[in-house]
Image 1 (cartoon, rainbow, N blue to C red):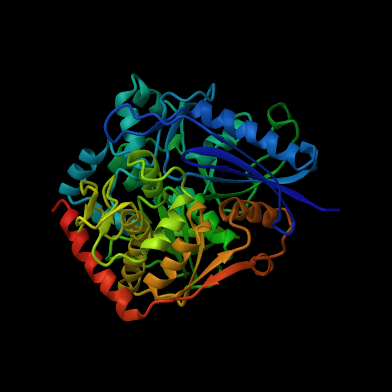
Image 2: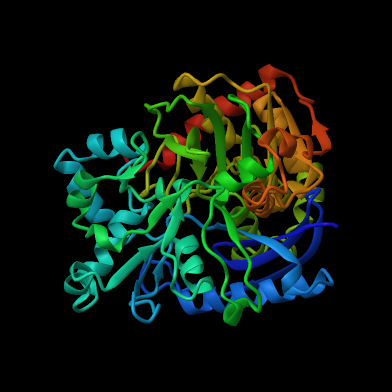
Length: 494
């Protein structure tokens, strides 16, 4: 009898649910967007109730679309936007403040003050992360400082903190389970990735009571069962991973040196570094790639803040295109730009620069520059930022990969996929199943429930749709990249 797994993929702009069979085939899919709140400049919030309601709704819709009853689901896997922070009441499950999203920069000044005290080295050595508003710890501290009575209540043990996975597990189990997995824990700035435990020194640095924190489990593990009153059936929650790590698993990058890059709103590249936890000197992040059977596999991660968002900007901000797919024909017509560059530092620059105050620019324009040149330059910025990440990984001692597995909404565009290969000068593989994030969560849940025997068996299920090989010579690619580097220097804030 075929076994089915329900994957909840709770993202930054929408909640999705996908039903997979035991071969990793999509049987049902549903997606609902929810509201983004921007109360002040560089603040980004979500309403936790909307996250919960949309997640619950898409689960029901996806199972129905698959032609199944909830009782036929063998396991649930959860993957989620990472770092986004929720604090809720232990007694009611109600959030005491809107969720503070990973993109939110409100704690930038606090992080600067902590850096001035020389705390970044300790934080980086223990967590593999930079001292930055991006991560959860300073967001939790902000909620404790700014919500009336929050600190006193937290110290009395009345409040829970969680990333979105923890919040969903709490709600699905009707408050019986307060859990997270090692990948999400590794993005909080409170978890020591070497000892695999919440770290007392880090909790003291950020003034966060330990009682708020969830228990940390393996990615494939027993996270409790969904309550019948909530989902309509008691289903084991058996796999959890943050979205980028889930995509690494969905792309079956199980060997050291394998890498995947996901092109969504932003772009996130993770390279599997095996049992080596590489301490980056290039402002990359050392992170837990996955933890299975108590064994940790580490990853080196680079984040690009703006990838798919540059296409939204072309469409909604500049109104140069009507729909995202229009970019392919325009870029094809214009070809590669050696003189016109778009540096999309709309919210600062991510790795390897980590300059939150950098701002975007269109550079090198002349009277001849038109819509198609700007579109081409904007799409190229995604590939050029990816080259930045690969070169940084190489400087950190990781080997430059011979190929890269890509996924995310942007890579349906052949021109983008080809430009990635051309600019990086390596082969790029696009999988048949581009739902790699949800698939990774499903694989983890299936592994725990015995639907899959091993990672090796999961690796056998990966299928390539198309390989893109470099079609321009290395000298031309390098010329473009050197010019890009000069233009980036012009937008940095220091």
